[in-house]
Image 1 (cartoon, one colour):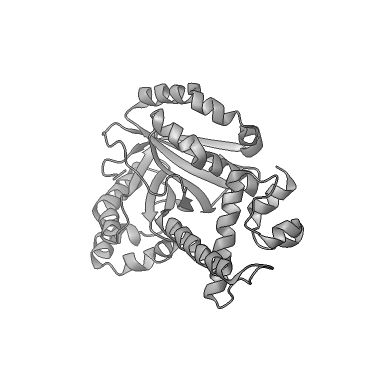
Image 2: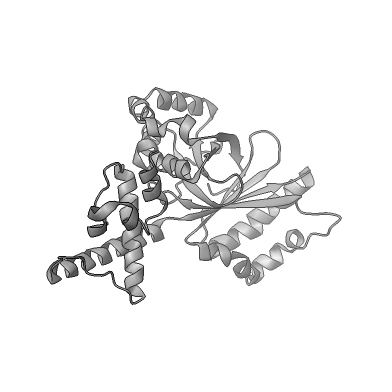
Length: 319
C-alpha cells in the first residue's frame, strides 16, 4: 500500500500539511492515489471530527474565498453526514464471544443447567438476544457463548445488571458461587467485537436441530491490512457468501481480545455435506474469482493466520 493511502486510512486528522495546497483548500477532495473505499472512510472520519468540534463550540473555519452561502451549506452537509455516521454506528451490534474451558461431564451438566434455566432467560429479560451456545463438533470443551449487545455500555454494565436480577441470582447460585474444590469451569476468556457495516446485525438463517456452525478467525499482519480485509468483506465478499449458500450469522471486528488485529465470523449449514458443497460453490464463483484477483485483496498480503472451528449448538441455543 502506498504511503499516502496508509496515512489517509489510519489518520484523518492532520493531513493538511502533508497533502499540498489543493488539499489544504478542500480537505474533502479525493487524493490522486486514494482508493474509493479509503476516500469514503477518510471523508466519514473527517466529517465526524468536524461535527464533534462544532458540537464542542469549535465550528470549522471558513475556507479562503468561500462565500457565506457556500460556508453555511458546507456546515449543513457536515451536520447531515455526521448524523448519518452516528446513525450507522448505532445500528451496528457489538458481540461478546466467551470461551469456557471445562474438564469433565459434571461441569458440562452444570453448565447446561445454569445457561438454560438461569443465564439465558436473564439475558433475554435484559434485551440481550438471541444467545448462542456452542460445543466443539467433537468433545465437550471449550464451550463458546455468543452474546449480542447494542453498545459497549451494554457490555460494561452486564454483570451489574445480572447481579440485580433476583431470579438469576437464586437459580444460578450453585454455578455462580461454586467452591474452589468443585469449580464450575476451569477458565474463561472473552473477545469484544463490533459488527461489520456490511452486516450490522446478527442473523439466524438456519435453525434445524442438526445444524453445523463454522467459526473462522482471520489474523492480519497489521492494522491497515486488517482493515483491508474488512473492506473486502463489506465491498462484495459478504454478498458472495450469501449467494453461494455460506449463510452468515455474524461478522465482527475484534476490539478487545487475543491475536489482534483480527476479525471473526460465523456461518451455519444444515449439515456437513451442505457445508462442503457450498464452500465449493463459493470458491468456483466467478464473482469471488474476480474479487480475490484484485492485488490489494491478495490473502498473502492481508492475512497471516486462520483459525477454523466446527461447532454444534447446545439443545437450548437460540442461534
